[in-house]
Image (cartoon, rainbow, N blue to C red; front, side, top):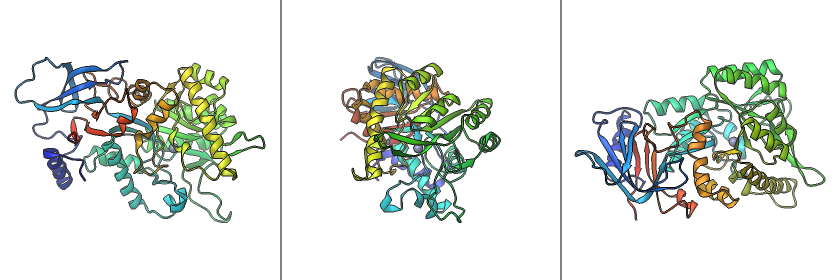
Length: 441
Ligand SMILES: [Zn+2]
């Protein structure tokens, strides 16, 4: 592991050995002032970067941001990122720390549940959290554990107590779908197979599932509004709807009562319409959104988390039903994304990583978004201040400003000129603790 340089390697090693020092704990001397010299500062909200800035960090907060001419007090720990672009810690609004890829050669989705016990799954989730952090993602909205119960809430607890390194987690726990609406499936009907989501039928069960999940620590509720998808005789994408409007309304009503929000997986058609009519807060994927649905999202203030990346790789052969479906999904997704951009919908960055292996780059979503016409700064905002607003954390995360959490990252080069620079994060500070500090080559 060549990620950690100098004293930071030592401090990380020590924290690994004694399990006490951590991103969240306040160790003696933590009140020391740290000053970061930023060559170029992208603050997460402004339209343009600022040159030669100083970020003053004390404990887990940004004390102030000042021009480079400002006096640095004696005794401050100075970190020189004057040759880098400095940004707020990134936010991925759609991850699955408990998924370990869906490669058919490795048993596909089902192997996650059928072949891995809960301890192995927890170890993999621990790896996922570390991977996210070292790529500069200091916050994740993790949208369900895929059969690993409330494991996400416990991983969050392990991070908070300093047992393992990891980003700030917003957990959705088990997710909710209907009978026939989630894997595992295609087994003999006599078998009572485990399901990757909590299955409900009817508004009463729907509300009960939401209550259970909120009771056990869900920060968000995740709902599946569509499940299987295929192409019809005309080659158009069709998605099987799952929950009814009444079922979704019961969930949304319950979640909103707890001041929590509801993320709805919805590809298109009836299921997407029910998601909007039922009052969901964010549409996940949204592969095919009609003009009327775009207008409804705009008027309802619905967030859109497109997760482009998973739909542009690993297509089945073109002349197979699955291959036709894969191509229809991608073609219509591009159109929907461009419509959403034009309508100024509130788009947040999400990768759906976990569905893709955690060894993949999370930043791959940035060039997808920019390739479909999103301005690079807008793409950065989708992974910083805009996501923070969705998470009700405006001003606290996704921004470099006085009083915000000290989540600071740096990349070599200028991501506004070349968005792929965000795939090469060399410095990561999370809650004021340095997790990674690679020297420039
Ligand atoms: Zn997902």
